[in-house]
Length: 251
Image (cartoon, rainbow, N blue to C red; front, side, top):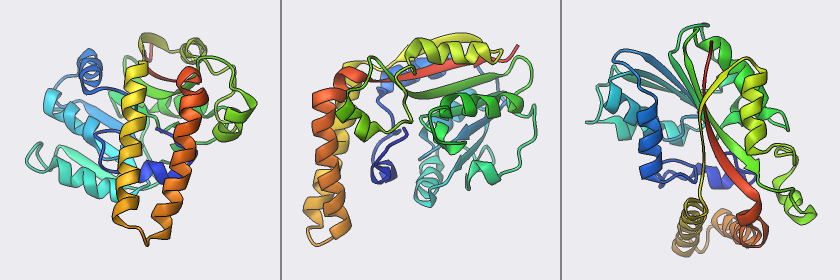
């Protein structure tokens, strides 16, 4: 998931960088109903867990792209002994520099990584616009991003920045896809329990790393920022910030 503090996005300890439980993720992937041999692209694939699971479940052919070399290395490690080496290709690159043929992929994923295409208040719309040409008629897009359950307070807005405008709601995200000519097939939102588990798991990881490396200034700075973030989450974010996953089909 897109973070304002990019330090938090480098961790490889989590299955995926999103407030989504394993049970819910499995149910969402089951909804996709892919067929053997179909092509799947994951933009901002992180450690590759979701793409690997799709390959395990459906025997699809996957392409994962991420700007983090550490994530790609972990993705390649995870796929060993789980899927054939020829079934998934993980590439360390910026998606904006990778030439991709239109109408090539049966499914394009971008889960919490809309900033891979462009940042700013229109990142969600921009990501969809650039994903649409990659799938043929009947192809699917699975995209996830944050949204606001209520307008952000000025203090919380200072942490979030303008990447999530107040009018970026769950309903507005679905409507954005419709405005671009897509058919919405499913939409899910993360529960408070999923958010709590996600945030506190991050907290434990950062606390542990700082404790194990007391002389590492980078780790100590990360800890300070993380403690500020968890306080903001408790005070404002828990009631304000949502996470939605949207399945669209291209007519």
